[in-house]
Amino acid sequence: MDHWFQMEQLATAQDPMLEGYTTLGFLAGQTERIRLGLLVTGVTYRHPGLLAKIVTTLDVLSAPRPLQQPHPPILVGGSGEKKTLRLVAQYADACNLFATGPQEVARKLDVLAGHCDAVGRDPAAIRRTVLGGPDPIGDPDGFLAAMAGYAAVGIEHVQVMPTGPDPVGYVRGLGERIVLRLARLGPA
Image 1 (cartoon, rainbow, N blue to C red):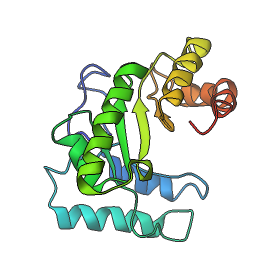
Image 2: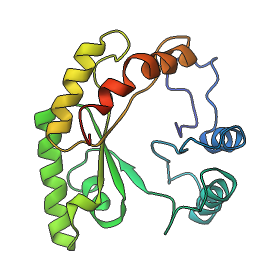
Image 3: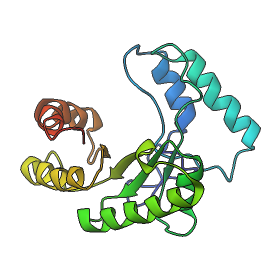
């Protein structure tokens, strides 16, 4: 995550809160097959030129090659109907909404489509993602049922965050019990 300070609802202030782009630079040196990125980047506390240099440096140094064209994908996270979704329509390659239920997400996607119409953009050109949902490890069937509902309204990708003290075990559990079943839902 791109936060300066620890998010108290996730961990204590004494727990590490790694800087996102430094962490991605480390990961880029460790892998050749994973797509790297932060869910969102706070653009209010970095000079835009510095942020562009950080992101393009990461793009040059990481796998897979070639460099992403025409630029690294821009994902805008948030559900604000007047400003955020309008910015998605104008500038983003992807949007990330909170998993507040398929009906509410469908409504937000309709708002986004209206903003796309206003700027002359095809809403299908924007990748649609959600953050959250039921616990995929604690309730795999409930998670997959919820994701089927999101897929039905046009969500293509889901973001989840490790919970508990073992993030590696969490990711391993996703790989062993969730990923293949999730892929069977179709393009979502």
